Amino acid sequence: MTTDSTPIETTDGFHLVIDALKLNGLDTIFTVPGIPITDLTRMAQAEGMRVISFRHEQHAGNAATAAGFLTQKPGIALTVSAPGFLNGLTALTNATTNCFPMILISGSSEREIVDLQQGDYEEMDQLAIAKPLCKAAFRVLHAQDIGVGIARAIRAAVSGRPGGVYLDLPAKLFSQTMDAAAGKKSLIKVVDAAPRQLPAPESVQRALDLLKGAKRPLILLGKGAAYAQADADIRALVERSGIPYLPMSMAKGLLPDTHEQSASAARSYVLAEADVVLLVGARLNWLLSHGKGKTWGGDKAAERQFIQIDIAPTEMDSNVPIAAPLVGDIGSCVAALLTGMGSNWAKPPAEWTGAVNERRIKNLAKMAETLALNPPVMNFHSALNAIRNVVKANPEAIVVNEGANTLDFARSIVDMYLPRKRLDVGTWGIMGIGMGFSVAAAVVTGKPVIAIEGDSAFGFSGMEVETICRYNLPVCVVVFNNNGIYRGIDQNPTGGPDVAPTVFVKNARYDLMMTAFGGVGVHATTPAELQKALEEAVASGKPTLINAVIDETAGTESGRITSLNPSAGKKK
Ligand code: ADP
Ligand code: TPW
Ligand code: MG
Image (cartoon, rainbow, N blue to C red):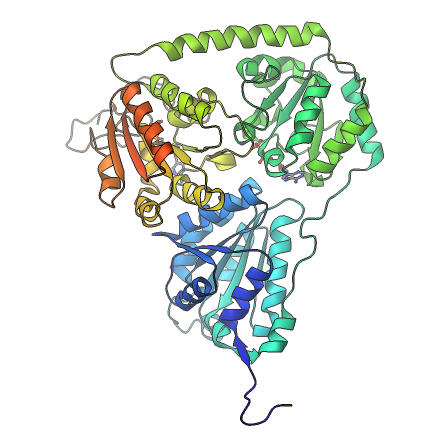
């Protein structure tokens, strides 16, 4: 019973949002504050949440995306209305494209005014705009529905194929009040947010039969396999089957890249020659040449058969026929394959594994020779060799990587030893993930982060070095400074005063951007200087930026995806 002297305890929209997130173990928000969410960020911090404030929403969104990949919990990005929301959309869409779980929460203006287009502050029909760009989109209009809204957002983000979810929270919602006890009751603690999905026994048998009959089998691990956190079983599948495997870039480290069954150094050979390919959380999209054509051996492609493990049934046959679809979560599917294989599974013919191994050893020796060269001007190889040494000595460090040549060379040169230690441009090949991913990796794991960045790539999120300094994060950014996009040597054919579109200010000092905010800046012109600075950064955990001067003539146009660029390769 209440009397006048004991007022009913109330809660409001702000607190219900915070309580709903916390109830579901979501304890970190990546954001840029402003109307109408400034108080939400303040109150979240007051309630013990980690609130990481960025300089631009795209990077807050990217941070949430990386957090989702690393933790299997949706990363939370929070933005203001219209422009802030739009700035967050690239990350939301990128998360969805990569099948990583994240929730973009944006404040929005008054529905009544927006819908009549009466010119509200930051007026925009955000829900309609977000819908085609994400896996699911919801709007909450009443405080008592906040619990449901957040529960639905969490389930949509992490169940089935993970993805980005948009949650629209109009300004008015935050100040709505309701009885505190009823508010508490309205919240939902999501039970089993990403339920296991067991594969059908007959699908498992079909896959095993196909694998058993293979003469030249190959396992292809994708970033879905890294996300699934079924590390021990995936390793057991590779080792017990004796099948050579190829990791896609973010699957590197699921088994150490130095593993003798890794076929990375014989990639073109195994893709062209394999007769049965087992895809584990990898799509046959452009990154795998759609499963056909020259990469896959041209005419030989017609005889090849695929087994595909994926949680999304509609992924099957998306590019080429899948002979044995295995639909379910990777953990359950791999476990079922292991059970079916038993203990005396016959290893693949020695003719095949021997041929793969021979090429692997030959190519690794060739690479070692190239890496040992120390040309007078540092190039991609000699600089990456220094980083490769440091990662080898610090396998727990997380590598973030973007650029064109800087990406392609780092992917093949820097070995990874542990799962989920490599974050990069992903399915889109998007520039701008660098600092957002780095901040998230440092915040959610506490481990050292090494960001290997093309000078162009770095520019997309460079202002976030202030964020890195502000939170004193153990991030070392290495800018591969070759004076431009791909190379620094293009000329303006007219001879006019403007430089060529791919060329930047020569000999720029990116290291000074870090010292401007109190971090450590190093100008490195030799691999020895680079290695020493990186070792110190990893050991000290101090925010560091190494300006690594790279031969401006060394790169190639579009790195290794010249085939997608109509002008690539043409001599200018
Ligand atoms: P990569 O770029 O490394 O080749 P992709 O992003 O193309 O990888 O493929 C990842 C695939 O993994 C997606 O098709 C996605 O549906 C799938 N996936 C993600 N998580 C799981 C999971 N837990 N179980 C099964 N499949 C998953
Ligand atoms: C959002 C197009 C692909 S790679 C790249 C651009 C601009 C930069 C390459 O130069 P960088 O690397 O980083 O200096 P390097 O080592 O070759 O010199 N906008 C977005 N995404 C993409 N992918 C581009 C543009 C692009
Ligand atoms: Mg460059």
